[in-house]
Length: 205
Image (cartoon, rainbow, N blue to C red):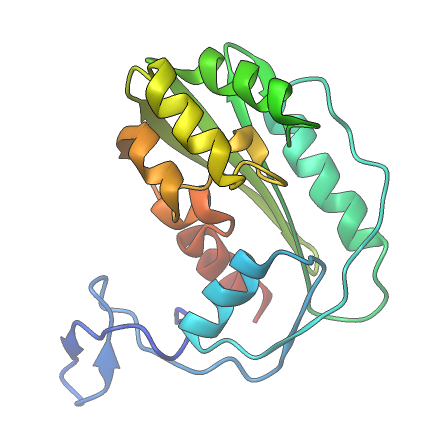
């Protein structure tokens, strides 16, 4: 039986009258709180939106910055998970990759400008590695950027929103103006892929 969080719109009821989602899975509240190994306000907001109980215990670890993007995302999540004692620890690492190169959080505005110029007019991958208890998974969303001209780039950089953002943009904010289309889980780009998370909750129950 799928374990799905409270607070998400229901698709209907089964023959017994129990609320189910679009896939026909029954809905049930999480019976224990998660430990979120992250300071990300976006991840906290997504868990709150879902009605998932959690506490925040950030993990400070040395993260990989180079290598195969899928391997790096999952390894960084594993490192964060290992740094926090206890049960039901959720660790996530999200990165932006284009042509095999990883674009992390820009160190300054010139770096952010170079990053966004590299992404302009191209389709990149947003890759998240997730670890919960003994289970791990990877989620990938493809994001197509529009051609970002100087005026749009200057406007976005002046907002300061690029700071502390993988790939130098926030799709849930002004960064939406840079995006032409996405394929996959939108919330993965925000910072926490809900479909992958629900699969982990189901597996760890």
